Amino acid sequence: MEYQDSLYSFININPETSMIPSSQSNEEFKSELVLNFSKNPLFEHLILHIKSYLKAFSNSSKDKSKVSILSEFLNTNKFDNKILKQIIKNGIPNKLPCLRAIIWKTLIGYYPINDLTKWKLITKEHFNKYQDLKKFYKDYPNNITDEEDIKTLIQIDKDLPRTRNEINFYKEISNFNKGETNYDILRRILFFYSKRNPDVGYVQGINEIVAIIYYIFSLDENVYIKPFVESDTYFCFEILMQEIKPVFMMHNINYSQLFITMQIRQINDILKETEPDLFEYFGKINLVMDVFLMRWLMVLFTHEFTFEGSITFLDRLFTQKNKMKFICYISVAILVLNKKKLMKMEMEEIVLWAQEFGSILKNNNIDEIVKTAFDIKAGNKKNSSKDRGFFGFFFK
Image (cartoon, rainbow, N blue to C red):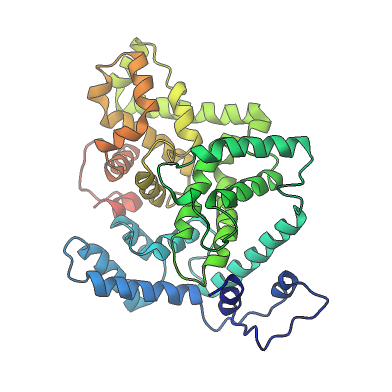
């Protein structure tokens, strides 16, 4: 099914019986279409995928907990916070790509979790807004003349080939826009973001974050979803950046540096309280953690973890109301889990270890790091099985 057909199908319009006024373009006409809210195709699509998954894996002991939770979800036909926490606690099945995409959209705040009837409207409204952006920046990318815009595109073009080049996905032709690669689409998203958010602009590091969001949203093979992958990615990224953007505000370097300094100070304070021996050792060898902590903070570990590890980590991160504070606890957890090793290293060795972070996950998986972070936050350094309120829900 072609792009136009899938778009019309999603919004319940039959293009053969719907006349487009000659004075209007296709995009203008789509913007004025009246939507049918009687059904939620996104939710129905999710349920069909879950049923297929349950049929295939109902006898798998490995996936037993996931099957149980998803069966309960089908029985209640509800999508709420309790269901979200249970699904994430037991791991989002990779064989259900639409499930992770929808969960991320609700956790980020793009879709309201308690009103499924609005999902379709939100998707269509943001699609139209994105088409308006394309019209507004009609000179992009070939006829850009503004010097700052040219500098921005040059920097984006330098960073993109290094973005998640361990997988071929981004080099491939988009499966919803055959004339572009997935890198081309990321390039446009990043450029539009820089123009709409001049207080941040384009900063190296945000490409790592948006690349993973786009990848997750692109995994769903449902033809009705494909036309909206780019616009959904853009606006979810923009919502997420509202919380984490102080780290990236290089146009207001004083504010950004102050924010990062405060974050690093929190990490030092937490480490001092949690593992005073390790904290004192760092002081003894004159280790300044800023060297690697700034990098950890600026990419939400998406550059530091393996690709699969980054996805699993973002599952957990998106559940947190204060994401940057959560990053502080994650940073301390990593240091605590590697205490014995670090206390045998010199300053230069520790800096190198921290900058080659992808290899660390071979010895410390994401679940262990996150659990340790929750233990530290709860003031309990030992791996207890006590209920710890919200956090205990994930790690009983």
